[in-house]
Structures are given as structure tokens and as C-alpha cells.
Length: 330
Image (cartoon, rainbow, N blue to C red; front, side):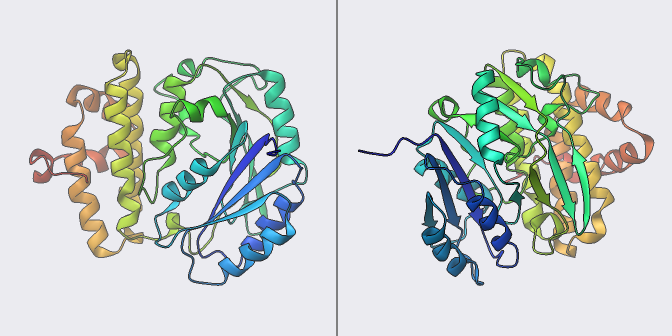
């Protein structure tokens, strides 16, 4: 008889041989006979793949899935989703780790709530420093309407806490087509994903578990690499804007989406020195074009609500000629 799977955990790996042992040890400490761990190797070129091959023999429920061509985090997660058999779905990045029993506790608490998905607090690990990060939604442990959690526009809300791995998702969301990511996104893949979940799922809750450890400061992480892959945030937020504009309550949610997009553009403009020169030029050109595509009244309102320093950066970019040429963000 085929084994009944309660939980599928999707774990993409790409060139993380330094950190993968911690991740794999934590999976072993979370194994249960009805859990499966889908280890997706995204065409690693270091020593990651041999570690994963050994893990399949050592970790109950571990399955190795391989990409022949590197496709990025979004595509690797989709590979795992296509293979997942569990009633619940979770994500874990290949350089993060979990406390023992994390998934058993998470599944039990989610089942007790009976909601479509939960979002969890986590611990950010940067070297030896540990910082607690909370879901910006309250109260915890109470089932809520995810659409209502998108707003207010002027405050950080659950859609701004876009970590796919910080939560658990019922399979009915996968069956409805709500859990797959946009193929090919290298960064910001979680942004349109979390917005779609909040617009279209029926129920969610926040939980105060602090047993997921998110590793920061990894030199090979795309968040620390200033090449054109970073610019996928533009495509991701273009998708957020387009899909939110098609929502039945677009007039309610678009101001939040536009304000968030502007804030992210301002953030990257303020960190321009980290980009390679060609990527910095492309950021300015494509960023200006993106501002030109936004609803201009909402853009004006968003800039008026921002602090002077960030608003000045975005207004300066908005005046670039590229903003009026309709350049593609593809």
C-alpha cells in the first residue's frame, strides 16, 4: 500500500555545501514516518550533491530531485511542489535549519486551527547573533481573513512578511493553483506568491513558533550579490501590481501595492553601490520605466507619504526619460 503522507517539505539546494549539513541534520531531527523531504538539487557545482545523496540513505522520507540546468529558487520550489504528496506543504531553504520537532508541532497546531495556511515567527541568525522576527499580524493563534490582513497601506502587514518558508500550507491551496511560484524568478519570488495567497485563500493564522532559523550573511546568497539577477524584484512587483489591479477590490488594495513597490525601489537605490555598474544602470532604466507604468495618482500619493530621503530618490528616478518610453521590465 502507498504510504499516507501528512507533510511534504520542499528544500531547494544550490552550492551550499558549507551549510547543507546543518540543514540536513535538522531534517533528520524532524523526521516522522508520514513526512517526506523533497531535496531539490538545482544543478549544484560544489560538493552539495554528494551530501544530498548520502542524506537520502540517512534521513527517513528523504527524496532527491535533480535539475540538469540551474533554474533558480522559484523553479526549484515548483519542482518540489509537482512531486509533493503531503496533506500539508512546507518550504525550507538549503542553508537554514530547524529545531528538533518543529514540523510535528507546526502540523499539530495548524490542524487544530483548521485554516488554509499559517505564518510563523522565526529566528534570524547572523553569525552568532540571534534576532526574533515576528509575523506582522495579531493576535497570534486566531484564524483570520487573509484579505483583511493586506491592509492598512501605511503599515507593515502580513503580505510584507513574504518568507515562503515561514509557514505551513494545506494541500487544497496547491490543488487550487495557489502555491506555485513564477518560474525563473531569482529574487523576490515570494512577493507575488504571498499577495496571491492573501487575496485568494479563505483563512489563515499567525503562530508564535520560534524553531525555524533563517541564516543571514551568507556570501553566496543572491541578496548579497549585485548583478542583474537582483533586478527580478521589478518583474515580481510588476506581477503584484497587475494581479492586484485585476482583483475585485483593486481600488482598495492597489495603494498598498504601489507604496510597497516604491519602498523597495527606494531601498535598492539607496544600496546602489553594491551593484555591478551595468546592473546599476539597468536598475535605473528599468526602475524609471516601472514607475511610468504605475497608476500616477497612486504613485503621487505614495511618494507624498514616504520620508523625504526615500521619496527624493524615487522622484529623481521618475524624472528619467526612460520613465516615459514604456520600456519592458522583462
